[in-house]
Length: 124
Image 1 (cartoon, rainbow, N blue to C red):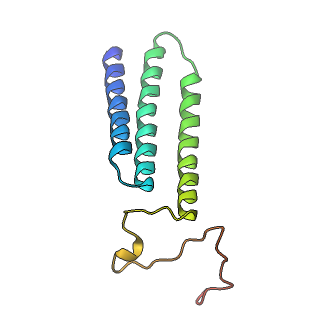
Image 2 (image 1 turned 90 degrees about the horizontal axis):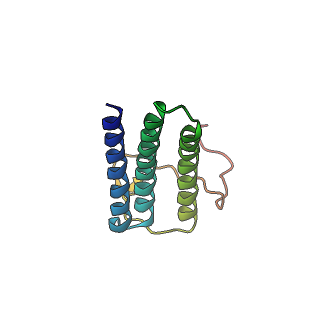
Image 3 (image 1 turned 60 degrees about the vertical axis):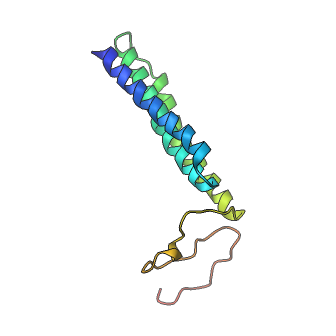
């Protein structure tokens, strides 16, 4: 039964990795590629690591897989955030709709380090 569970987890991880590779090739701009790669890599490698944990339970418990998963789940979102911020600062073009493209949404300008903050906002 454990072998069946490991096989399912490996198939799920492989699916996410293939979807991420397909998204890297097919998505049109930097921000969409970044989003696709971050999500699929985290889910795919996380599934592989979970399969490894399930497989090693019958042979003895090791912390290596859990430490790898912890490192992955901490570093992947942080690196994606930093890459996104650099893309925004360098004005990398995006095909994604912006908040001002949606009627009824109030858009507040994003505070970037290169912009000076206003002294005060009315109504604060």
